[in-house]
Length: 231
Image (tube, helix red, strand yellow):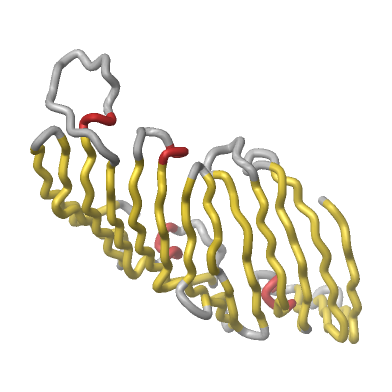
């Protein structure tokens, strides 16, 4: 889905580029941007001399009503609603110099008859090249997951993310017409290492579940799963 309705109102003044109002549409969603980029952040060896304002670049981003299924990258049956607000600054043209606060007013997904969404606005922050989860709890149909930790925004940054809670086992098979599962799956999962080379570990336990296979017809009642391992 391409960006449409693109509009930008910007000026160059006192050694900085100032975006007074920028906007675009992406499917049903709307994107708005304002900010200022001081030319003092540009390299010194430019072929032309220009006035250079000192100080950090600043921006404000507001994304409302995105429907991720419009990208046609999700499996059939998954729909969602995502809205994001972000404000930040950078003292250099380097991701490690970025400082930002990110909030999700809307973060909801639906998988056929199953729903999953945040219980309150999720919050993330970025500082010194690290994206940190300040608050992210997802709840839905017999599901409650809590996400904590941080991840480097560069491939070689540190990774320390943990997910814990209860998961409706049916979510794991919703897109498979021949396999059906029910019951509550308690999980604890962790990712360490780096984003480029993650080290995964965790445990999963399910008791009193039900698993059925349509062809050949197989039904397992009161299934129990207790698995702990590193991957």
